[in-house]
Length: 204
Image 1 (tube, rainbow, N blue to C red):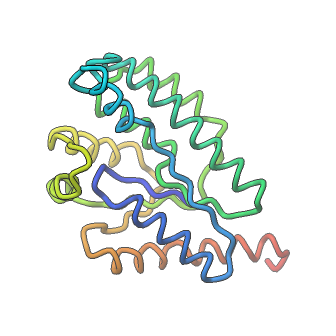
Image 2 (cartoon, one colour; image 1 turned 45 degrees about the vertical axis):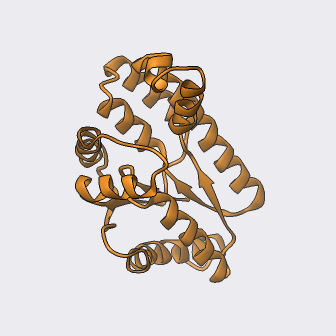
Image 3 (spheres, rainbow, N blue to C red; image 1 turned 60 degrees about the vertical axis):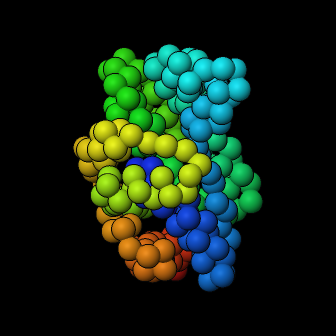
């Protein structure tokens, strides 16, 4: 299992989809798993109900709790699907993302401990890639896609939280063009996947 993480606007979804396709092209059965927490969807629901955003609908900690549950379910679904199909799971977001969200939104230590315990049964990724993009660059990307909005203060807080939470991730510069980033991601992932295939085949 491979996981790609990073702040909003870092290119996680683009690179995870490309990586899954590249693995399949190389003869490896791979499945893309989108493990969003539903924040964007909940924001749309809130606006339909006449609220400004999801926070005004659920409260800060209420939203973080719902987000944590939805992400847990998404991760579980992605893992089970990959296991049943014998595929390598390519995770668009993984467990560190929820801990970062809680920290960046000041969710408190109790919620962080609870989420850490709830997410503990999930397996460790063979490799976690942190798409390292400066918050200013990520902010402009989010604004350009026009689907949502993120405050630069939140992106700064998320970036700092990822740097603190991730201890064993491989940092890949995600600020370049998508092709260059995809090549850098592949250079990290392919040797790991090949080793895993060799172990499964009893060749090591």
